[in-house]
Image (cartoon, rainbow, N blue to C red; front, side, top):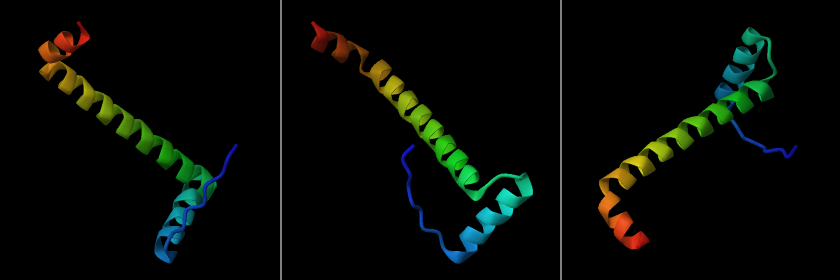
Length: 66
């Protein structure tokens, strides 16, 4: 597994530690889950935008494919 260092301000780091403690997880697990959720959300938004563009420009895409 590769690693990534994320620098947080004191208040944000304390909030992360508090959340981790409250949920019985490590700060690293909380941060990893947050990043993975963000990636899933972004991937879904990009896919939805691509789908809308493909529908909007369907005729052009068909002509380009010929």
